[in-house]
Length: 332
Image 1 (spheres, helix red, strand yellow):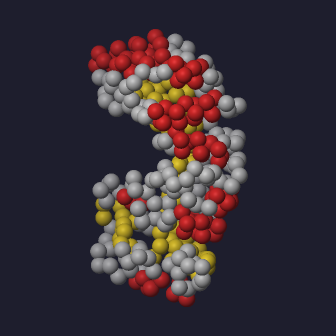
Image 2 (spheres, helix red, strand yellow):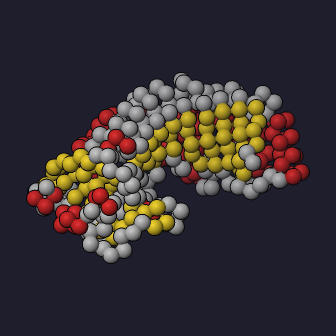
Image 3 (cartoon, one colour):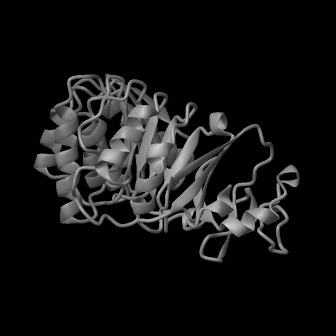
């Protein structure tokens, strides 16, 4: 079927969405899980991250290693408008549709494994034809998917519990979606950059079960402090409980009066998980900030370096003294 159309073949495989050439599909041996399109080196191997991958030829004739298919339970094939031109058609192939639980949308320079995934404009052509009934985690690596297309795609995925937004480069600040969404099972938002978390909140903040937020406590630049403060104020304005803030911080500058004032307004926060540096000075400052959260009940800490021996014992004592109303957990 794919050779009847002049456009590339779009493959959806576990976490990947990529393109290959129609003529290369002739070399696939699905019963042997060989998708190399005539490439000699097609054996599975361990990749640098310890995973398993297999070689495949892409639409631009380059090759990439993808997550291998170790069992083939279903194949769904669609004719869709060509993703490379206004005329003609492409083929969309979805492998094991009911087993796809997480997916990456867009290329990621931060993760070499996903540099070959198709970009936002191509995704705008593909996503209208894609519904994944078991999907619960989406990582969005691009901000140039058509907002209407992204809105409709997210609304169709009824089991999404985690949404992560990590664009390689933010090209614009337009809304991610055409209209704010309420996703019934969404629980957690992830984004390293507070500014990107603000955009996520604008897109899906109305979701009724949304209660966990994971981002960097980024105070490395004046703009970072501004974005962080704005995000915390947006969270403080929520009317539903925040069961957990997961924060990572490495900056050692003292917190400002405004940052302390924001902490006092975060009455919706019940639990904080905080990755902290090994600096005693900043640790004490962060403890004073956490102590201002009016309804904080649980705090668990991790560290970039180990609080070993007496140092760990001293930190534990300081934390429990600073946070008498909270249960303090120290991550080993």
